[in-house]
Amino acid sequence: MDKTYRKAMVSRGLEYALTFFIILTINFFLPRVMPGGPLLSIFGSQNSDLPVVIDEATKHRLMDYYHLNDPLYVQFINYLIDTTHLNFGYSIYYNIPVIDIIAGRLPWTILLMGSALLISTALGIFLGLESSWRRGTALDRALLIVMPSLKSIPIFFLGSLMIFIFGFRLGIFPVSGGMTPYAAYSSPLAMVIDIASHLALPLACLIIFEISGSYLLVRNVCVQQMEKPYVTMAFARGLKDRSIKGHVLKNSMAPVVNQVAAMLGFLVGGAIFIETVFAYPGMGLLIYNSFMERDYPVLQAAFIVMSLCVLACNYAADIICAYIDGRTRQW
Image 1 (cartoon, one colour):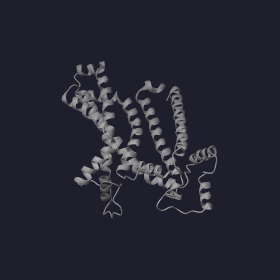
Image 2: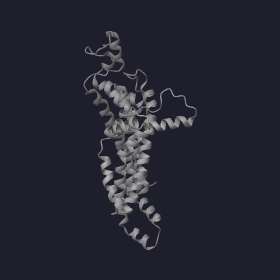
Image 3: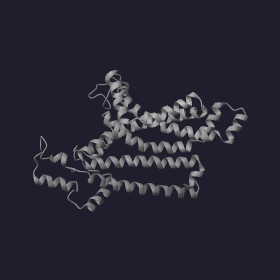
C-alpha cells in the first residue's frame, strides 16, 4: 500500500467522520423541533380519554434524568458524551434500556436489508449484463420498459398490494411480524421456514424497489465497455461469449460497488415504509413508533446506528473500489 493511497484513505475517513458529526447534530436537534414533547406518552394530555395522573416530583425527576431541564447546549454536550460511550439511556416509551431495544431489532433489519441488497444486486448485474449483451433485442427493450416502471411504484402501495393478494386473497404468506408468536417449533428448520415465510413479502417489495437501479447502471456501464477495443480483440481472437462477458463485467465492477453502497441509504428509507406496512419487527418500525411517541433516546440511537452502518459501508466501498480501479486511489 503506497503512501499516497494511505493519505487518501485517511482523508476520506476524516470526511466521513465530519459527515457523521453533522448527522449527530441533525439527529439531536430534529426531534426537538417537532410538535409535542418527549414525555407526552408518559404524562398524557388533558384531552386524552385516559389522562395520566403524575405528581410534580416524579415529573421533575424524569425531566432531570433525560436532561430536559438543562439548556439546549448542555443537552447537546451530554448527548455527545453519552453517544461516545454508547450510553443511550432508557426508552421513554418502552421503559427499558435503549441498547437492548436496538440489539433486539437490528438483526431483523440486517436480515431484511442484507437479503434485499444481495438479491437485487445479483439480479441487477445478471439482467444488466444480459441486456447490454443483447442490446436492441426484444429482451433489452422489454427490460428497459419494465425496470424503470418498477421504480415508479410507491413502495407502501406495493406492500399493501402484496398483502392483499398474497396474504388475504391467496393466503400464501403471513402479512405481519417476523415470526409466529408463541410458536413451538419442532426443529430449527421449522423456525427457519417460519421466519422465511414472514420475510418473503417485505423482501420481495424491497427487491422490486431496488433492482432497477442496479440493472440500469450495469447495463449502461457494460454497453460502454463493449465499445472498447479489448472487446473487439476478444471477438477477433474467437473467445467464447462467457469469457468476454466475464472481462466486461470485471471492468465494470467499480461503479457497481459504489452503487451497492449508495443503495443502502435508499434501503433504509424503504425499510421504514416496508417494516411499518408489514409490522416487521426491525429498525424501520422502531423508528416510526418512536417518532409517533416522541421517544428521543430511541430515535437518536436508531438514527445513529443506521447512519453509522451506511457510512461504514460507503467507506468500505471506497476502499474496495480503490483496489479494483487504481485511478480512484487519488479520490
